[in-house]
Length: 215
Ligand SMILES: [Fe+2]
Image (cartoon, rainbow, N blue to C red; front, side, top):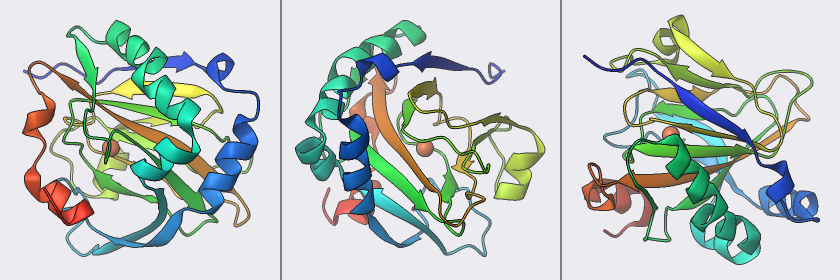
């Protein structure tokens, strides 16, 4: 029997560099905003959903333009992930997907309902939303397919600047709700972590082909 859903939360605002807000705003404004096709293998969208519109800042750009965030991923945040998990934890050694930013601008974008290929996921929020929306919704039923089904039995995490969350995104389907205000922006860093029982070598090759055009 599967253990019930749980997640660990930390406030890591004190780890941010002084000019983090300007850095994040500039990089997020420059994200790759478009319709993304549903992800092979991992999508948990209803069958009729073919594309989801959102913004993505690719890992290479995070590393280059937000070096302090990349360092946090490899050091302090990795340490917090290790404290939160019963098994030893590793960050990704492949820099194409270790840490990326997801950006939602306005109220028509959301993040795809999916499961992760990595056993431990860290999300670090850089925004909060007075008008509402943008919540991370994690379904408690590992078999749930589609946003409506996930919403029926779920945990809802409201974005808070500096909030870091770790959870088992490989087991539990999750997505991000759309924002309410058309002038609002949501920025979150998504970090992949691996364990000995589910190492990085288990990442599906098809996923890399889909995302990067190469394995
Ligand atoms: Fe995920």
